[in-house]
Image 1 (tube, rainbow, N blue to C red):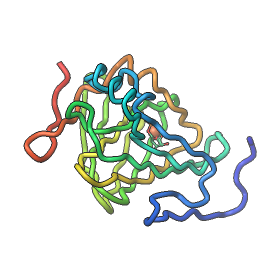
Image 2 (cartoon, protein in one colour):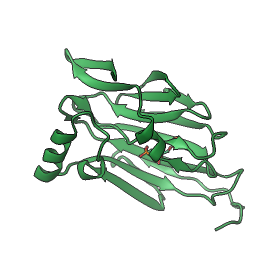
Image 3 (cartoon, rainbow, N blue to C red):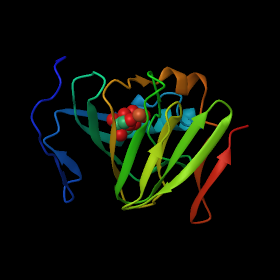
Length: 189
Ligand SMILES: O=P(O)(O)OC[C@H]1O[C@](O)(CO)[C@@H](O)[C@@H]1O
Ligand SMILES: [Fe+2]
């Protein structure tokens, strides 16, 4: 699929079911898919063996992977924690470091963690907040609610590419834990 999209189209966020209608690609990440991502790797392993919950689901509308096209996806992060660390996405950098991305929050509450070199920043996300991920920054989202799914839609250039290895080799400098009825963004030592 290397030809540009010629016909306008629309997608619909189904707010009852928390899915992007007309999606053409689905991915889910369970506890067993998150090797090395949480601080308590031993607890994650035990939880994966016990019930292997789904941490997040992604409903994507794909586009030809060429400059000028845009992809979009609804991500649903379930509420939950691994030893007090909130459920989150793996996080990634774009292979094409010139590509930025936008998230529009649909439901729930969470954080967008941004990483570049030694620098970590974070932004709160809640319904109607639109966050911008500058080109070159790694990005991860975290569900900080104790009970509700955190749902947002992302739009990014189809030629961005996903680099997951970099977020393992140069991990995010902060982790987000449950603390005193809310969340704390804690420095990784
Ligand atoms: O790709 P990750 O880090 O697993 O996170 C999932 C989310 O990020 C995206 O890859 C977009 O950058 C979407 O598919 C989804 O919104
Ligand atoms: Fe991205």
